[in-house]
Image (cartoon, rainbow, N blue to C red; front, side, top):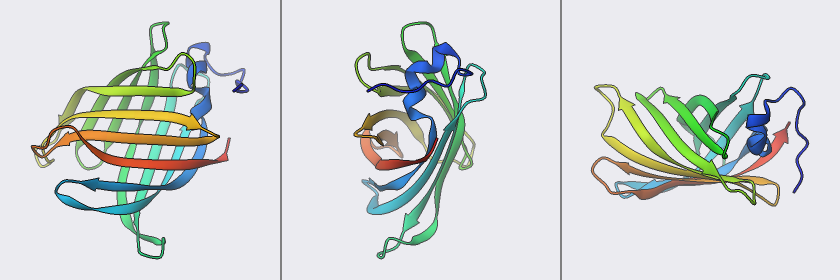
Length: 169
């Protein structure tokens, strides 16, 4: 698949050009200590010509009719290239008291990237959270992602996944 690269985009970010835009969709959230639920999501990935991609995601739980019921997770941060071999860092902050630092590498043959936490900081009132892995990929034009995490004493376990459609960008 060929992607049109914005000429103002840093060439080091070009391997992630496929994720730029505003995306909307739905997914599933669950964990061993909570019942599974459906959520909606809006995600924005943008750049301003500097050597990073700005990242903002908002999710909300959905009721039985698929309508927004209550706010859920919010995260904001930055994708940054690391070296010249398709490696990237993802820095994320959450209002629930976490700051995460991920490192990973894009797949050389398809639009996808897999990352794992290298560090997690938490406030005094935040739950124990020790590790996470994320996978993002473009599948038939949709942004698909999964998140596994080690949280509240549980080992690395599937936590969230979603399928998003590009609505802008």
